[in-house]
Image (cartoon, rainbow, N blue to C red; front, side, top):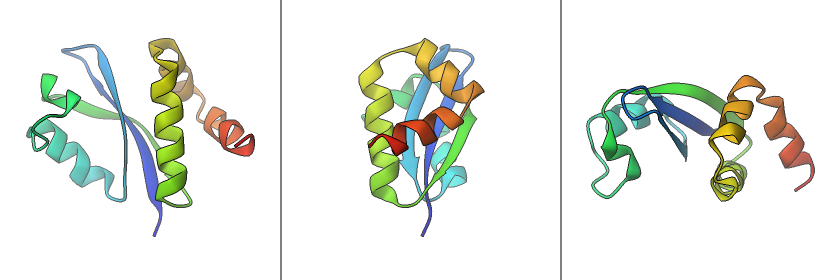
Length: 94
C-alpha cells in the first residue's frame, strides 16, 4: 500500500505541518477538525495541502518526515514544495 509524505500550510498561522499517512484527504480533514488532541496542527483550522509525495512504504515516509523536521527550516520546506525532486535526492543518499 502506498504511503505519503504531506506538507500542509495554514494561511492564518503562516505555519507548515509535515506528516505521513496512507490517506491524505482524511488526514487533512482530521487536522482541520482538531481530531488530534495534542497535535501542533490544532493551532489552525485552515490547513491546505502544499505537497503530497508518494513513498514506497511507511518507513520511507517516516524517514522523510523526520529529515525535514530535523532541518527546522521554513525555507527548506518551501524549497521542497517548489521542487519535490529534492526528496528523491534525499532518499537516494539514505
